[in-house]
Length: 138
Image (cartoon, rainbow, N blue to C red; front, side):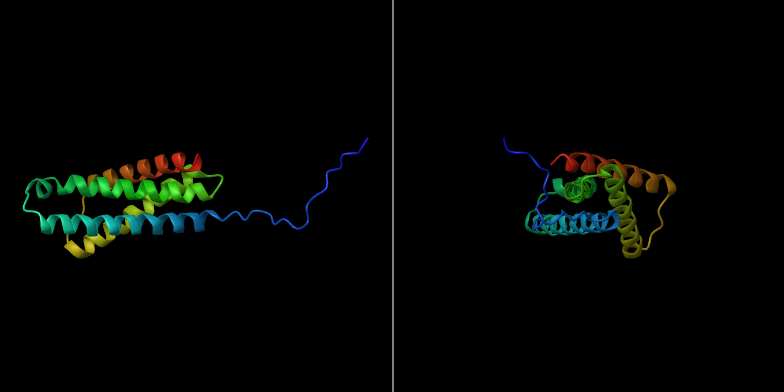
């Protein structure tokens, strides 16, 4: 009978696991790209149609685009890593909200209330956590 030995294959490379910061950065870039593409598409739709329905609900559409962008970025980042899905997803949500609020305040020259900021952070963290949980299972 042949004896079974636990030999390693020396020509195979171990899988590289990227760090948490790299995963957060990649997910943030994906989120920003998805958001940018969605905003361009919405701008073209708004400019080419005469419908006031889209203009009336533009705030809700932008919230949906933001949540979808955070979700997709978190799912992408956590699908590449094997652990810490909630932490990565929530971090992507927080950083994305900080960037979007900072840009919005700079462009509009308006201040933001504490309640609005807490609401945006809660929604961003929830979308990131959900994206992280879904992404780890992909």
